Each structure stands twice: as structure tokens, then as C-alpha cells.
Amino acid sequence: MRPPVEHSELREAHVTGVSGGEALAATYADLDLLATGFAHTGLRLLGWSRLPTETLLDPDLLASAAFAPLSFARVEGALVATLVGTESLPVVAAEWETLACAVAGARESIEAVDSGEVQRLWLDAKETLLLEAPDLPLRDQAGLALGGAAGLLTAGLGVGGVARLTGRLDGLHGPETAALTTRLPLTVAGSDRPPRNVADLVGHLGELSGSDPAYDGVVEVQTLVSADGTRRHVVYLPGTDDMNPLSSDGQVRDMQENVRLLAGEPTAYGAGVLAAMRDAGIRPGEPVLLVGHSQGGMEAVALASHPTPYDVTNVVTLGAPTAQVHHYPPGVHVLSLEHEGDVVPLLAGPAPASAHHVTVRFDSGIEGVAGNHSFEHYTAGAAAVDTSTDPDVAANRDTLDGYLDPGQEAHGQLFQITRDR
Image 1: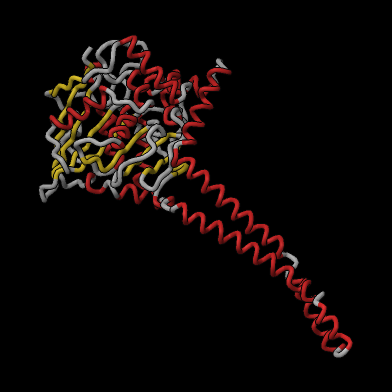
Image 2: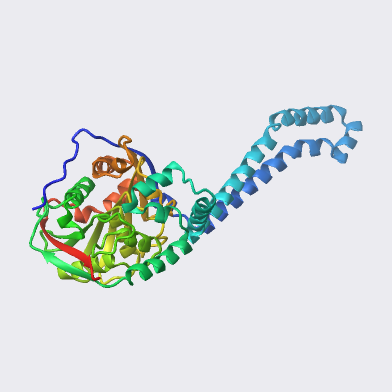
């Protein structure tokens, strides 16, 4: 049994920001209609502001003064009083026009995010930064120090550069080959205990993600069986084991996998995870939750966004870049936790916000570069998610209910994935 990972009992976190969720489930037509409505309101208000003056200068009204001077004086007085009441209408009309422009601009921004253009611009900017400013800023230096989660290779390259780099890696180490997946006759603390909340999911992944080299490449498939016999599965995916970008051994969770994941290419790690799910006895149609930290989170969103033999319904990522994935199949819900001091989730750029991908940022105290990426912070962040009353967080959290029933039976199986070289 792997020794448990020590976590502080005192650390607390508070949510600092939420993006995504059902609040974003508006169509482009809705936004166009809203912008048009604001613009028409502004034009009507502007028209009303001109009406008293135009009426005062009406030729027929002026001609009536000679025949009914008293009535004319009363009408003129009423119109002048109206002018005083409408003097602010042009300002209000301008505010409505500004709102119309803001909605139209937001619509264009959202469409750019949906199309992936924002991600391309982000990566192009980083590529330019690397070429024109070799002395990288502190944030990219931090990425280099945390090479196991992406590092300089992903912080400085655009999409094309990452794809070219994978080709160079193939030339150096040989092409990506099928993974070897071996069942281990071991268990991890908590494998037979069903998760009750997001903090339990994160805590159990932390138990699996310790520093013992014997567990490099190990993943766990935890099968949950409810009282009515329904089977669900939680697949726990740790992050990078080998931080050497030039490594050529059999470790599957290395820097090369990070680069391939950023390029959107298949990986030996992903192939091994699918083999582990098959060997664990997951049946077609049975719900699957993927929980991944760092590279494990990158692999989780990659698997959830592509067709597989399995019914992935949910993904929970911790400290993982997710912007490289732009769309998920219907029915997939993604919950991403990002510690404010952790640079790793930022290395692929801002994740596209959607109704089914909710990103929760939290602060549990800032430490060093590696410390900010640790499970101590993400366990605290998960506890904050469990108690959050934000409607988008709560709605996404509710989709996990089937996996978080404490009355289920749980059984975990460990598999070690290596690369065949």
C-alpha cells in the first residue's frame, strides 16, 4: 500500500472567480436581438428629446398666435416646461447606444473564443515573446521551473511550433508507440471508500500521486456500485513523473506527453488509460468520471473530447491547462480548479468558457512555484468548491451526484502504464 500524502489540516481556500456555466448559454441570435433592442431604444429616446422643440417651431402653431394668443401662450408654456424635463434624454439615449455597442462587442468576443481565434492569438503572442525577448518574464521562468506540467516547451511555442516539436521528438526518440498496461496487485488508501464530495476526489488522487518512483505511470480505476446495481467508475490520473525534456526511457508521463497533449495529438498515456479502463471491466454505457492533476488533467480533457468506447460524463481537473480543447460532446461536464498562485493552468492560454465547462479560481495562500501547484492547495480549493453557493458551480457540482453517493460500494484497481521503447 502506498504511504498516504501528508496534507495540512489548517489550510483554507476561498473562491475568487468563476467562469463558464449555464449563464453563458445564450445564442448569437439572442445577443444580436439584445443589441438591436438597445440601439432602437436609444434612437426613440433621442427622437422624444427633439419633439418639444420641433412642436414649438411648428408653422401652424405659430400662425395660431394671432387668433388665440391666450391659448397659444399656454401651449408654449407647457412645451417649454416639457423641454426642461427632457433635457437629459440625449444623455440617456447615448447610454443606451453605448450598451448596444458593448453587447455587440461582447458577441464578437464570444464568437472569437468559440472559434478558437483567441487561443491562436494567445499562442502567437507567446511565440513572438519567445523570439523577440529571450529573457523570459517571471511567469514563463516559473513555467520552466515546473517543466513537468508544461514548462518552457509549452509556454513559448504556438500551435504550429508545438506540432513541429513533436516531430523533432519523434526523430530523437522514435515515434510514439503503444503503451504497455500492467495490472498491479496493490491498493491505495481509500480505494474501497466511495467519494462523498469533490474534496474526496482530490484527496484520493493525492494519495495516488505521491513521490514514490515505483508508482510512476500508475492510474486507478475505482468502480462504484449503488444499491440498485448501477455501476459507475472514477478514473484517477496523476500528473507528470519525468521532468527531463530529453528523457528517452519507458516512463509514459514525461515532458514529451505534455507537448503532444498541447498539440492535440494522441499519446501513449491516453492509450494506456483506455487499456486500463478496458482491463478494469468498464462496460459500454456505464458512466465514467475522469479526475486529473496537471498532465493528468490535460489527458482527461483530451479523452473526454474525443470518441472512445466509454461514456465519459464528467471531468474534474486540478492545476491543468485546458485551453487546447475547444469543444466537448453533448453531455460532458468539466469542472476545472485553478489556484491563483499556480502558473501551470495558464500555460495554454485562457480556457474557452462554455455552459458545460466551469472554471473555479481560488486562493489558499501563495507559496513558491512548485508549492502553488501542490495537492495541499487543491484539496483546500476542492473544499471551497463543495461549499460554494455560486449557481454555476452548484449546477456543475450537481452533475457529479451519481458519483458522490456514500452508500455505494467501492473497489479500486491499479494499473501501471509504460512506453514500449
